[in-house]
Length: 465
Image (cartoon, rainbow, N blue to C red; front, side, top):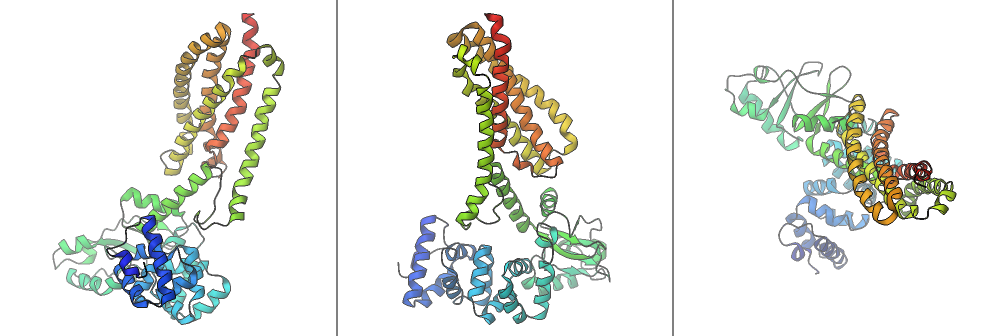
């Protein structure tokens, strides 16, 4: 396994074992001085696959491996590395090498790196960049995190209205090697205000005599630089765009957000929602890279809160100790009833959290959603109550059967409405609806289920005495 090129062979398949083997081969190759073999591997592997392997190495090893790649390939591979590894690797590189690498990165990736670098490393590297790249990186890095400005790239293509088709195509051919995308080109006025957009397809299918101004689409969907990046990602998905232009308050074009960057936002937001749904909270980095103490801190708060909620459940049970002592058979059905309440609530919460996150449902839909959920939950409750009636007759007699059936219908309705209302309430308070997680909804439903069950027991059981 001493030759990385022999390990990879064809373009690397992202199997865990293969990645680990190649990473070990690279470590051995660095120690044994097999630089030619590593260079062959870098040339053969796809950039994203090479980055997966290099992410297993420490920053010094990554810097040594990248030094063996061509300038362009080095920048491509570096762009696929996780942010934390990029920062450590840039800090480990020689100043001139790191500056040359940063200059070749795409505009948005360069800005993200500059923003993430420690202050001392940034001040060491930025003066070594060319002035244009340095100012561009500083400008893009100045936008607030989570906005369109922080996500966009300034690497877009512009055309002028008087250009005829052959001239426009020739211009695209010249700028293509250094552009993020040439499929969409933007038409600006003298003040850089966005006038229109034209696609490469329209250009290559148009008459040579046609001008850009005649072919461009003037009603351009755009986003403001301070808009939330989730809204930008939704717009790209809604209109099936390859890129969305970003303008400032004066309607001047300042950048574009491409579909691949929007996909990263969607993935990050989905991950965040899943973590919130598991009562972990935002960790801001990959699970594999997060520190032990940070992971403890993110998890312990919610667990303590849920422990307190469980204490409320225990206190609720204790409040009915006399009723329980006279009817010990009630305990047989307690776990089943409160679990069903929690499950119904988790279902409703999951549906609403996802609908609110995707924009399928908005705050104004609350009344309609509440009415629908009430009908659905009532139907579910009655169905489950019928099943519980039969079980109750077998295990507890008529009194217990009626009690359990009525309670089942009530707790399913209660849990479902809690699961629906909590995401809307959090959204109204400008909190993330994903916080209405299954554990939180379940804890509330547990307390409510206990109170409903034993409350009905106090009311109904004496009637059957």
